[in-house]
Image (cartoon, rainbow, N blue to C red; front, side):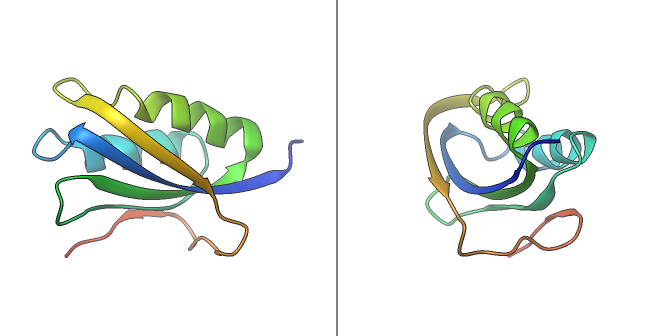
Length: 94
């Protein structure tokens, strides 16, 4: 079993209004990840993923493409050993 890894990501591009958050929640739950996803005021999407390192890495790769209709132009990934992810995976509302 792989070690637990927690990362936060900021995804930029056409990522709001294309069901990016719903897609992210579905993909994260399918991989058994904990965390959240939310829209940011600047038009980007922020997410926190925590779980087996290989599942987090696969989610990072998936987020670079996103759902149909999304166009990811940039993505920042930060290791987050300082944060504890909530149980489950949820969409946070404004």
